[in-house]
Length: 192
Image 1 (cartoon, one colour):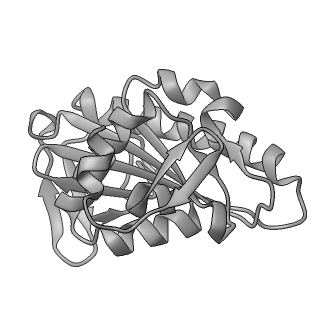
Image 2 (image 1 turned 135 degrees about the vertical axis):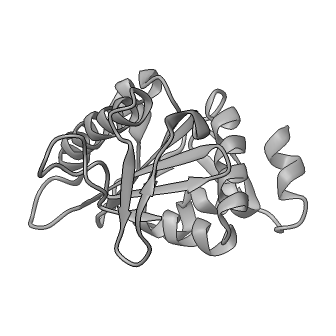
C-alpha cells in the first residue's frame, strides 16, 4: 500500500492511496466534508473531483508515466504497468448525510469511467473492510459488486438501518430497499 504516492509531475499526488495486489491496482480517493454545506451538493462536487483524479491516476499508471513508487518504510520500488492491468477505483465520502442518494445518479459519469469505480460512505467502507479484511477478499468483493452494479443501484447513507453495507455483506437489496439477512452464503447471494 502506498499512501499519497507522487504523480508523474513534480509536486503532484497520484492518489490518496494505491494498493497493488496480484494483477490489480486499487486507486483510492477520500473526500471529507468540513463545514456546513448541503450534503448532496457537496457530494456531487467532490465525486466529480475524485472521479477526475481517479481517471488521471488510471491514465498515469497505464501509459508508463509512473515507473517507480516510493514507500515511507520500504523505500522505492519499480512499477511495471503490465503487471497491474486491472484497475478498480474507490471513492470514500466522509460526511454526515441524513439524506441517502445514489452516487451514479448524482454523477452518472462514474459509470463511464472506463474502469469500475465504487463509491462508499465512510461508515460503509469501515464495515466492509472489517468484514473483508485481506486484499484478496476485498478485491473479490469489489469484483462481485462490479457485476451486481449492472443490475442494482447503491444508495449512500450514514444511517445504520439503511446502509448498503448491510446488503453487500449480509443482506439482499433491490433499488431503495435493503433487508438484512444472516451472513452465511453471502457469495452465493451476490452471484444471483
